[in-house]
Image (tube, rainbow, N blue to C red; front, side):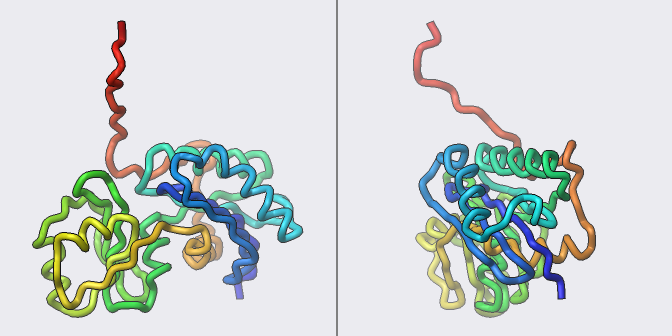
Length: 226
C-alpha cells in the first residue's frame, strides 16, 4: 500500500484549502471559502497543517497542487507557492486537475458525474466522469442552456458537481439531474495524487504552469486614466 506523505494545496476557486495525507488518510485539512484571500491564507494554512500533524516539509514525499482550470489568480497563487516549496525542499511536484478533484468528491453518487467550475456568466469549465471518477470526455468551456447535457441525462442519473451548478440548476428541470454545489477541496486530491506518486508522474518545477483553458483577460478600469 502506498503510504506516501503528501502536502496538498487547492486554490482553483474562491475557496482555499491545504491538507496533509499519509496514504489515503487525510491527517488534517484547513479550509476557507472567503473569496480573493488566497495569498493571505495559503502560507499560514501550510504552517498550521504541518504544525498540527507534527510534520515538516522535509517529512513530505511530494507536494500536490490543483492545476486548473479555474480562477486565474487563485491558480497562480497555488502553483507558485507549491513550486517554491518544491524548489526549496527538493521535493517532486504533482498536479491534479480541478475537475478531477470535484469528481472524486462526487465519486459513486451517480453513474455519470459532470464537474463544473464557474467561468462567469452562463459559462462553465466542465468534463464528464464515470461513477469511479475516471474522466470520459475532454475538458471544455461550455455555455449552458436548457439543452445542455441532454444526451447524457437521457441515459440515467447524472450528478452535476462544483461551483458552477447553481446556474445550471436554475434553467433545467430533469428527473435524472442531481446537483451538488461545492468547491474543490485539498482532501479530494489524495487518490489522484497518490496515483501520480506511484507512477512517478511529476511536473517540471521550473517550467510547470497552471491549466487555464482560456487566456486571462484583464478588466478595464472604470476610473479615468487622466
